Length: 289
Image 1 (cartoon, rainbow, N blue to C red):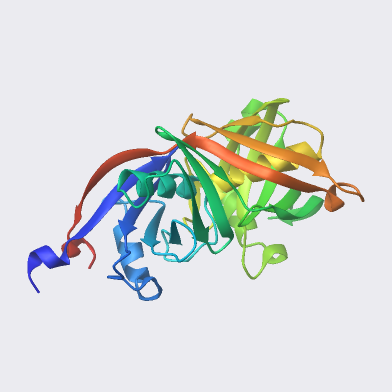
Image 2 (cartoon, rainbow, N blue to C red; image 1 turned 60 degrees about the vertical axis):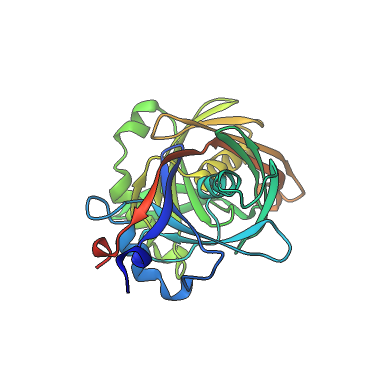
């Protein structure tokens, strides 16, 4: 096979510090179900492009396109808020769609997006499964956690002081709760968050599939904001400062519903933030071995 045909055209993008490789796969060149080794190899930092995840963009009969989203370890995820914003802008920049208001299909459902220059606002699928005040332990240390599924599962540990957030060993405790028996078999993402005031939070996230702390997590920012709202600590919109220093804005309605926090529900959940192109290029297969 000629060398040119083995090259893979791609965009490298970052959503507030969450970085992704995006590939236009509308011709069906790649079978995503058989491309997990490609994902793992391309996402290796220093040895290849390096990224938190890889997104294949494919044709869809109803929406503007559909995606297949893979974490850096090759596992497929239902949803990724920052990845969704990057995918929407990628589709607009590459002419997949010329519309500034578009929709695309994910495993979590149809996502709507609005392009605002290098910022993108996406309407997320409805969160579910809110559980507050989970008393769990790791290494014999007790934690008070809260759970909600915002397209993917998230637990949130609310911290009181800024120093608590800075000094938390996210890698250690995040890994322990990501694999905690309470969340088997799927596991969970783990967020350490602090409420600064009714409209501002700060967050650090251990991401399932990346298996480490990332500079930003869209669904984790949403989860943290909604958990804090269920505790009457914040109101929409909430600006969430990520580890990269960039801010994600979370909009929502709620909580509403009977029966306390576990019976509460949230609707009209949106995530807005930057979605920037780092570079575009051709990936050679000699870095995919």
